[in-house]
Length: 406
Image 1 (cartoon, rainbow, N blue to C red):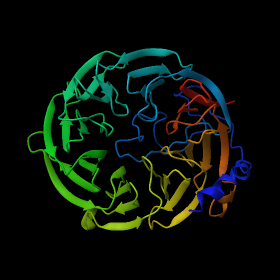
Image 2 (cartoon, one colour; image 1 turned 90 degrees about the horizontal axis):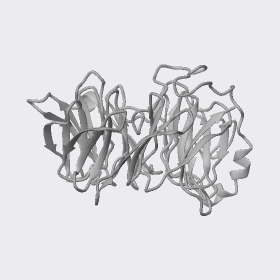
Image 3 (cartoon, rainbow, N blue to C red; image 1 turned 90 degrees about the vertical axis):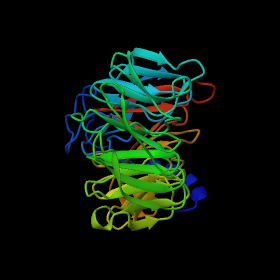
């Protein structure tokens, strides 16, 4: 990484390097003309999938520089990026859970948190329910139908900060964890708590793949378990500790775990026979929020820019950008990043990074769109659109914005 001060003088230069891609995709979230790769066109989990990869193999989002399709005022403290399912955008703030039409921003329904209570986690959407963490009079997980009716409440001992993880649709369960260090399996159909297991401190990150559940704690421990079912509960498989609280977790198809740590960088932790061993560890930079785990590279934002690492070796591939505090999102061969500076925006990069040295590169920027104020969440690419919450600029209201190419 270069000196952050040097980056500031390069913004204008970097902004001129963007190369327009193909014509933007047509339609709403369902349209995926021009998309490549397998995968859905929406973005159901805060980090795309239960595995937490932050990456959709299908090329979604605007392929060329977009314009604002619609924007709607939102109040309260935003908890994470919007999520998208079946033509609907869901956003939780501390005060309200809201659903909007992805096509035109029409509010479909809204639910306020209980008196002296707040929503605490980002939203996860399954095929039948919408899930969000809640703290206060009814601490735990609240589930709503897609029409906004409360379906059930699953109680937890303390606040749920980590996103709720909903595994494969054919499994009637979800996983959640609380800040008291408990991991729960909850029946998705009715909210019954099927088991509870104690881990090693407040859980900040959670991911799952098949019957493997991975928890990351505030104390820097990554712990993996095998779900043996309702009667047998969890069996611990391995546990690794690195300095700094766990900020991000993703489980690869190989069983390896990619983890980001507060003040302690990014690491690849081996699965299989070398379970828990550190395959590689880049001590700098340290991610703010989730990672993007693509086919060849890992992407991380640290407040000073976007960094790409080789997935196999961990060696730095390229770096770019400015004030990127929010977590990135990957789709196809594009990685989208929110600029959280006062004159912020959204930037789309080619995952290959273009050609150049360090953060001076040619051909890496596909497009940049300037928002009215700074970006407040990571971007969400879905269908032909990209969704982000922005501050509204000087004295302007916070807004959920949809961007689409012409």
